[in-house]
Image (cartoon, rainbow, N blue to C red; front, side):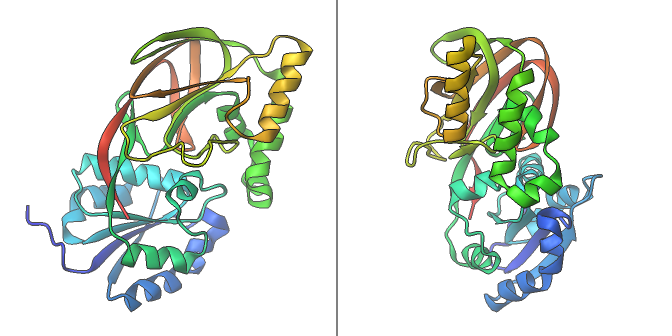
Length: 298
């Protein structure tokens, strides 16, 4: 298949409801900005039937770049279609979701037109993605307390408070939190214990709440971050946990952290998982691995 690298054609996948409909309202601005850089744009709205991602999977070779406009979930769907179609063109991202965790890690501006300029002007580079059983994710797979918080938090509250909406719901959810028994097998060890939350991520922000120290996350090093949130025993540990959540940095005594290439997570009962903020289904066993240099990103 001949790759059309110089045709300056962009396939733009737009989530029309992301960012309170901002993408749809400002679509002409996006197209006009990219056109000013010499690009022709074909815009397709995303849909629950996945037709837009099917177009990406089958027709990417007609374009020189792919652009996703929406939240992290929009990007995640496109990443799965990108991999399924053995896509070779670079992908750009214009973030319009409530938190945009991964965009912040990538250093993408929240200003829509600046994000357009980045897509037109920046050099692409390969980054790692994660594989969760038979599906892919761009930056996080997680389960437990904060996964449930993500589903419980209304879109209206997310739009009003952003990151603080997850934090508010997370603190309130602690009173009903149940201990969950985990067995986690990594490349070098087995970890067993009672935890409230588990994630494997490649982002400076995780679960809408946690933040990793600057410089700790490398998107192309072949490692993801395993994070476990300990279940508290007694008032003192509960107070410490609340303080660590409010602080928002993954460095307190409530956390277990490891860098991993692979992790198998076994849970004592089926639990719901989130992949990039989207429903990842229920399972007791998750086989998670890092796929190196899989995505060519702008």
